[in-house]
Image 1 (tube, rainbow, N blue to C red):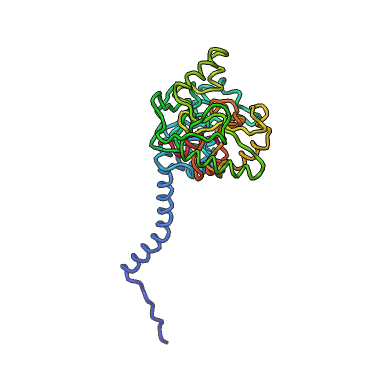
Image 2: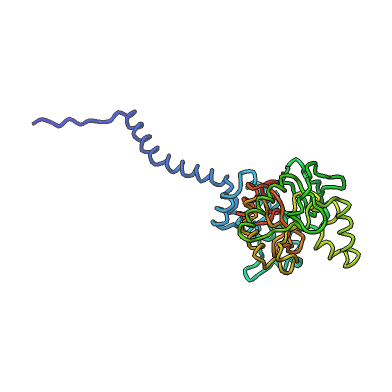
Amino acid sequence: MTRKKVYRLKPAVKVFLVIIVFCSLFIPVAWNKYQEYLYTKTNEYAFLQLGYGEDAVKLILDKLNDEEEKAILTYQYNEFIPEFLKCKYFMFKNLDGYLGQVITKEDDFFKYRGTDGYDYDEIVALVNTNTDKPYYTDTKKTDLSLGYSILCNKYYELGSDYVPDDLVDVSIKYYYGEAKKIRSEVYEAFKRMWSAAHEEGIYLIIVSAYRDYDSQVQVYNDYQESKGTNYADSIAARPGYSEHQTGLSLDIYSKDSTVASTFKNSKAYEWLINNAHKYGFILRYPDGKKKITGFNYESWHYRYLGEELATKVYNEGITYDEYYAYYLAN
């Protein structure tokens, strides 16, 4: 009878196989533990530990870069941060300003609260445009290098000596009252716009155009002396801060509507609202935007930006102050 041959593994092979089995079991576990360790070092993990929910963390990671995320991690948990991040015109550099409005000035901003809480978009707009601060404080010099896209408002000053070097006389065909001057490119754009409106039976009239510093002194002082500073500031710019001094702004009425109270309901106004941007103009002080622009609604005041920029502002549906702060400043 033949005995079966028994094969025995050599000790070295046994050790090798044990190592293989051990590694196949241990390495995945160790790798997973290592990945878990690495995750604890991520910003995502840190935000979750601070108390932010998964949706809030995803928003933070989507909207901010790594440096900004690390800066947020130096804050304590703040329920308002994700709310501001949802705003289209959120600017990280202004985050402290946004938070200041809902935390340290809650009573002041109670009027911005609705049934759903704070109006975060409005707070973002106010802080971005500097209008969370009193008018004519923390002012800057208008950056004249920006050409037709310059900003002149209650926080950006032209100064007393600014005079455009390309002013031209306006033909009496286009204006009412005293003789007018305007910058040459603005004049050419207005004439094209006038012709387009005229073809539809609308007769536009310029009632105010370029106004020098001394003239603005007289305008502002007249309002101030008759009705006080607060009223004057709501209806006229202080000298050196007027858009009319830029030579880029026009007050426009029509032949059949030459007063503010009727112009806003006129066919000419409707036409301008829908077409002015095609010729480089925007309505500068829209209805309901006084908190941002600093001025009452002026259906007659149009600012020249050039066709491309005016169309962008028109399509955004925001004031030029907001557009400038988000897209052009700095």
